[in-house]
Length: 247
Image (cartoon, rainbow, N blue to C red; front, side, top):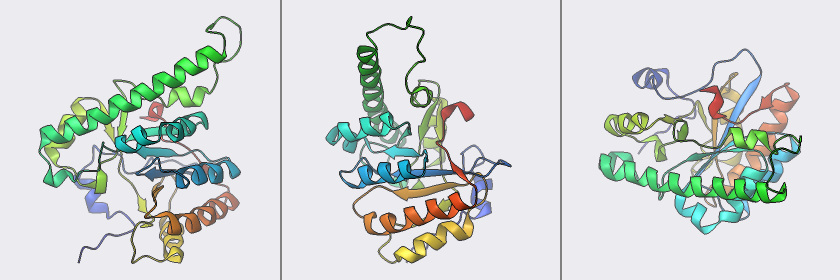
């Protein structure tokens, strides 16, 4: 039986120091992340819940799901959140050749870039196509989160990535984003109450927390997320996206 801890063991971070596991800070800041979307209903519900607490997050999206639900992906961007690459179809890095793995990531990046360009075209059309109207550029936070060829965010499915795959992706200027805390919301053996405890008990300032906006995790996540947002809001925390500018 495979055991997956909610809190990252320190030795794992030391084994892979070039990956991002948290963002140390003296400020009361948490980085909520959501994997495996966009998914109808679940992602939309997540966006509405984040809005209630004026929280920003990072959505690590699967390319195949973006293709199926481009309107939901666009909604993530329009609400001011940052998007990241979570592969095209969620392969296990340990069971995939390096070449196939990298191509899988690139395929998803093309899809993400296309959607980002689509948003830019929409915004330009809404503003009349002019940048000389003395008006601030709309949704600057969204644009700051757009993935460029020199600053892409990638989270490996299952957290399983070989050293060779990691080296290849970092050579292509990807930032490999891991985590500090897993809510374990996808696990059928984890109760919804335990998901809340997994986060509240283990979080520190600058922690990167993983939830899933997927149907499999929906019951646990929809119970846990509001309680986590409420708890840490009362503690004076803010919730920020993993804006590429911080790396």
